[in-house]
Amino acid sequence: MSLAAITRPLENDLSLPHLLPPQRTPAPRLTPMVSRQPRRHPPGLWVLSVAEGCERFGFFLMLTLFTLYLNEQHGFSEIRAGDWYGAYLAAIYATPFAGGWLASRFRSRRFFVSCGALTLAAGYFCLAMDYGGALLGGLCVLAIGNGLFKPNISALVGSLYDPEDGRRDEAFGIFYLAVNAGGLLGPLLGELLRTRLGWRATFSAAGIALIVSYLILRLGGRHLGIGGRDTSTSTGTQPNRNGMRALLLLCIVLIPFWMAYYQQGSSLVFWARDGVNRTVSILGMRREIPPGWFSASSAMFVVLLTTPLAVLVKRLRWTSADKLTVGVTFGAGSFALLWLVTRQAAGARVHPAWLLAHYLTMTIGELLLAPIGLSVVSKLAPPRWVGLLFGLWFFSTAIGNWLAGVIGRLWVLWSHEQFFGALSLVLLLTSALLSTQLRWLRHNMLLDSSATSE
Image (cartoon, rainbow, N blue to C red; front, side, top):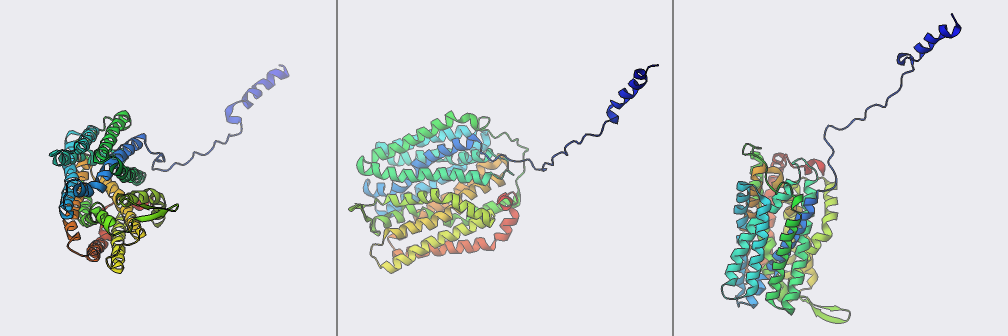
């Protein structure tokens, strides 16, 4: 036998895999049990934010100029204009309860949002016609439109995210930023149109903005899920009873905040007109600031402060309950500032910087309260209940708005010092009440991701 024949089997054996040196395989990379959530927000958020910004353009245009419109165009006294203002705000924030119930019943939120946009546009065009019955008819149509639009667009934002998604609070912050972008442009453009083209052009601009909102919803509808429908079944998630109690408590104790906040469209706009030195020097020329522009400063501060305040709150690791309590405290401080200013002024006109300082302080409270409240509702509510509970949240706002008109009657009966001091005291007591319930609220808002993610 040849040498080659003897060595061939050995060569074959050496080539077998079990005789080769073991190959090191890389260790499997450990992945966390919780799936990573994408940092980018879904396109539907931007569609809804722009649509809401257009709707808020019309709302804040109306809110800022409504009492002036009644006083100057229809000859209403300041007391009567305040009564109508409070009734109007109460109506537009009470109807979302019915609108949320309808969407929960028929489970087609996007349809009701689109109908609401068209109805709101019709209401503003009614006011633009400015004939005998147009005022009351237009206000009724606006109330119906807001009831269809307001709770369901907020519910659509929440439906884009899972309850445990840490981006939810940030998403409502972006949504609220769009709200105030519209709130900034509405009063500014409204004042320009009012002084140069009249009330018809002013309200027509609001109607056009709502037509744009409707078109945006139609064109971007494919990003809002399956027709914007609530796909939960009747046997879906049962409500967290303690969470519902916490939400109900928040709705009740925040009524005084909205009562004070919406003075920006009644007593504060009258004070800006009659109690603030609005003449300023710009490039050597003296100009008078329109009273409605001061209300726009609130939205401007929202745009400027949203990001830095979010960074600060994230570092402080506040829960939503903490934010709500501190927000009411800032509201109390904003009116305490006006109390001090009017006490020192003794009836004289004050520098406009003081009114701007009030809006700055109030805006910090608003940013800590309003978008977080929307996020809490969307997290605590079962899918079938979301629209209805958003309606409850806005209904509590409606009570505060009605009280804003009721308290506004005291503007001409009390001194300015007494008026601002009373509002500050009410908010301070509300903050104290929230503080006594803070531990319970933290414990019963267990679905609140801000406690862990922030």
